Length: 167
Image 1 (cartoon, rainbow, N blue to C red):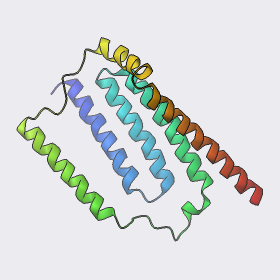
Image 2 (image 1 turned 30 degrees about the vertical axis):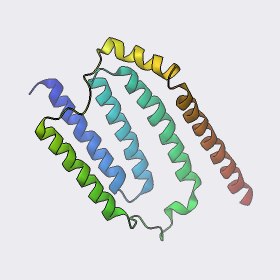
Image 3 (image 1 turned 180 degrees about the vertical axis):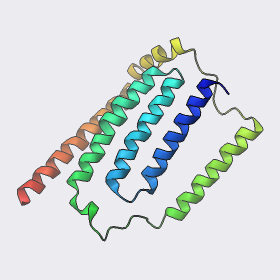
């Protein structure tokens, strides 16, 4: 086993552990903090795969934007930490069944040697082609996501203002 493989398995275990903590923790603030660690683990895996641009985007968008948005939503929702709030819902069994079915499919594909993705581009072409695609072909979805995040932030500010006016 090479050093790169050992680092990959350590990062994968760290990311998987943090992701499990996101799903299984009972305190929602702990879930959000575990989500930050999960996003950092994914970014580290991107660095290990020579996709530095994706790692930077992962840290900027997900760690910086989405997680902060989730933390604001948690802080602005006072009812979320009430004692009567259910942690698990009725769909936990169905979702566990779907997860195990996907896991079985992935293990089957791995054992059969099925190739699920095309060969990766060389690292020097990957960032340039991804940037070109984001600014040409996928510029509309890219802008829609930015407008969606802006609308969510404005909504959070309006809700916070209403809560403050009630007090």
